[in-house]
Image (tube, rainbow, N blue to C red; front, side, top):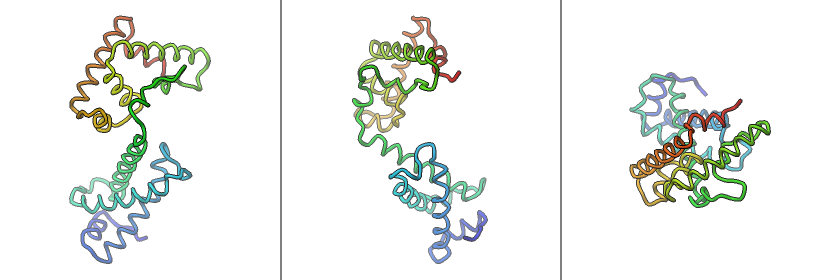
Length: 212
């Protein structure tokens, strides 16, 4: 694989031919080599999804690069720019796959002794900290249940606790992004007001879950 300057990458990829084919092949190899490290927080190479995801991401990235060559401004290495595109595509696809078979009801349902806020707890902490976190989680769940409408509760838990993309939540609720923003804004105001009535600030709540 030959080393190319930014200008050489752009020139080789700009016109169909042997130079473009060679550049695409080299670029694909660079993308595939970088994905295991870039995705290590979310997916390991041993995961059954990894190979197919990598192939899909590499192909989509090459197409995106060819379509976006004119937007490359040369402020970084060309391969760094491509790598960022690949990571964005990969994370978008991971999010899509993650939520594809999960309903909003599943996200917000509360099993005995558990609940959507349970993922906030620091399980490696000592027994006193775990007990304090459990009490706070139970308290927050009660406040959410008492103060929010069902739609507000679903939207808040799906987006803020489980990280479901706004667009996906809006689609499943038969709404749109702006309406969902308004729904979440109203939900946060109601929760903040209730917590303040009980002498708790958002900082007080989050402090319980911060590492000691």
